[in-house]
Length: 329
Image 1 (cartoon, helix red, strand yellow):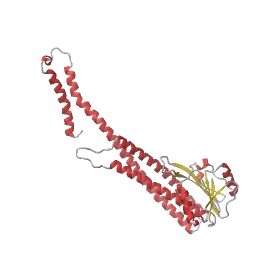
Image 2: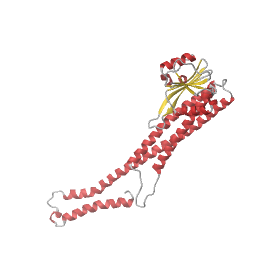
Image 3: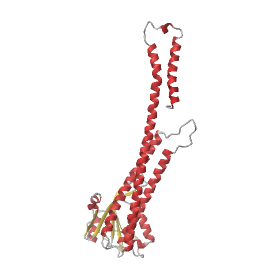
Image 4: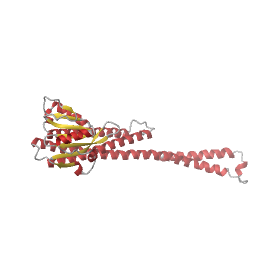
């Protein structure tokens, strides 16, 4: 799908284009969302450029993502989207900056593009030039990533409160999380970690893009645009530092949750150990009186059977009382 965005106030902001149609006269931004082969050929012929393929957009080498050809800048970066779904994704996004136009080619539909289009509807100067449109789009993408980071931090904070909250426990009882709660918390930490990992990948790509853009567009940007680019770079560093802090918090929470699970497993093993120790003396007594020796005096004793049973019960109770006194139970 091709959509043209014009700076002319008399034209609608986003005009759908079909193959063969010419660009509006004042078009500054052409957006290609999951373009077909015919649409790609149409744009390549109209701008005399060669668009990167989707396979090329997925390459991780800097030379394949950021380069200049015949005074046209090609800037490719991964971008996270579907962040509010159980399965967030990273899509490919390319910015192609020609002499008078910005072409965006994407195989993802992050919300930041719709947000920027809404802003431009009210402030048409955001698409006054190709450079303005590019900087505005990058600003919207960074703002959206910051919102996603806030969402991750809120989820981690909620999980932390749930895991470490002591609650109102009575004097004779201990309030602990059950296995199902810990497993659910562990799954939540995993989802937050996966989302944060994809977000940091997007931030890293945008940081490389900003550095390359600053070094290659010095001559074509005026002072306000250069200041806006510096602001974007500062915002990227700030969000990246916050994402690194969230990563550390996720790792700490993961280790704490695994520690609690380990403690719970140890408690289960402790119960079995105590039961084994408690039943060992009765087993010993029963084994002794189960031996078939003729010279055992208790065999002819009338109280031998109840005394043996009493010894078994007493030998089982005494270890349990000892463990409780030591605080092991």
